[in-house]
Image 1 (cartoon, rainbow, N blue to C red):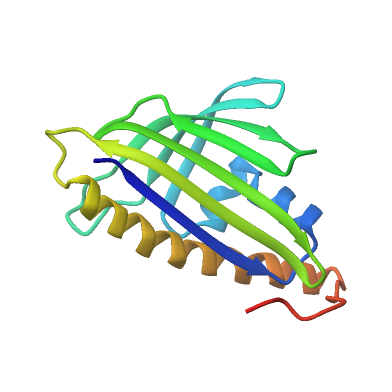
Image 2: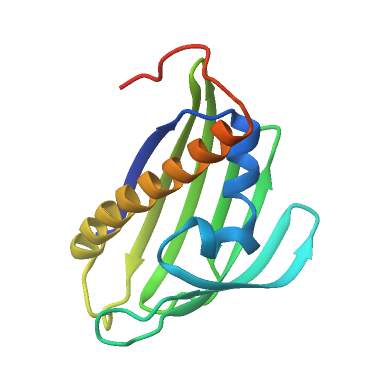
Length: 161
């Protein structure tokens, strides 16, 4: 068995701003509530290798790993995978953006498998990632929308439900 999640959020902000803010790795600790730091290890064109460190969990454990992202601005897509997989056998993530009349749709698709020695199985991790993705996407939506309003942007149509 493998894990798969697919979550989408509609953001009342222009696609260019949404793309810019959500792909500014150095800004992730301000954008996400779970990340303490991002250290860029290497940049090569549209590919970035970086270390992501989370805030301590409820047990005081600090989780950190190296990932690699490659952006395709013209295709409004980002593909990423963990280089240091930790408890995952593999972890691949696709971010897809779509321009909407009232803003932007941002979608995260994650495919992964847990190692047999991991503290949770694929099903439990799927549930964990789904719950956390919704929380983080709501936080990101609110921050991007706030920034769009500060810039004077107004949607031309209501966002779909």
